[in-house]
Amino acid sequence: MYGGLKKIIEESNRVVFFGGAGVSTESGIPDFRSSDGLYNALRSYNHVPEELLSHNFFEKNAEIFYDYYKKNLIYKDAQPNKAHKALARLEKEGKIKAVITQNVDGLHQMAGSKNVLELHGSIHRNYCMQCGRKFDLDFIMQSEGVPLCPVCKGVVRPDIVLYEEPLNEEVINKSIQAVRDSDALIVGGTSLVVYPAAGLINYFNGKYLVLINKTETNYDDKADLVIHAPIGEVLGEVVKLTTEN
Image 1 (cartoon, rainbow, N blue to C red):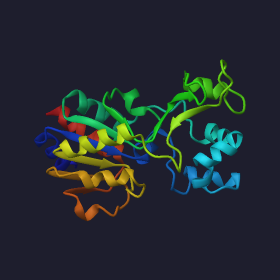
Image 2 (cartoon, one colour):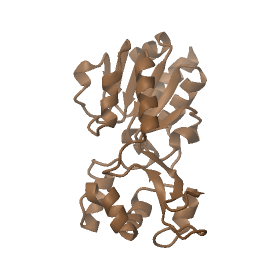
Image 3 (tube, helix red, strand yellow):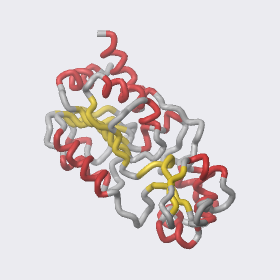
Image 4 (spheres, rainbow, N blue to C red):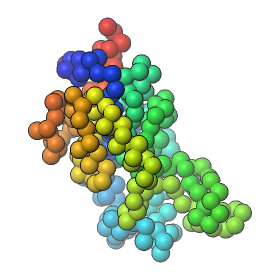
């Protein structure tokens, strides 16, 4: 069914995967913009998403921020799905050279991927804004109200990129270089509307551009292969085909 994608992967030596929220929805983590997504959940807080998840709001209303964050952005029981596992397998086989993700859930690493570039950071990394000490996710979840450093009493914040904050320069540069060096770029589970992350696709000069998303994107007409289907279904089937041969 997805023989075209299988053929592209087989013919390529440096495949890079760039994924968005749709990669994790099959693990039970809602995306942002669907009817039951995370943006919709914000309505009960009487703030638009870009405000509540902004640097300025976090600075002034940390308690409200953390109330929403813990209830809606953390899914501790989520497990890697077929997409995460397929990408980890392809990396192990030497095909996937890098996974670039907009997600902050850490599921790619949990599945076994090693070279993961997290554009928007990770919920699993947290640090004291005052002394720099590092904390895990359990520390955040077990804290009441605003998490405070037990040593200096500074506010502990997640190492994620909020609105109004720039992407990590080192991560974005590594991502750009990975895309430039790739001979095949597979983009999956993203509508390609969030910038500057979506702009990465413009650095691709390789042979095959593949877009896998349940709905159309503005880049569909530029791709060599477009598949409108769930990313886990597609990659799971392709890796199964590859393993069988």
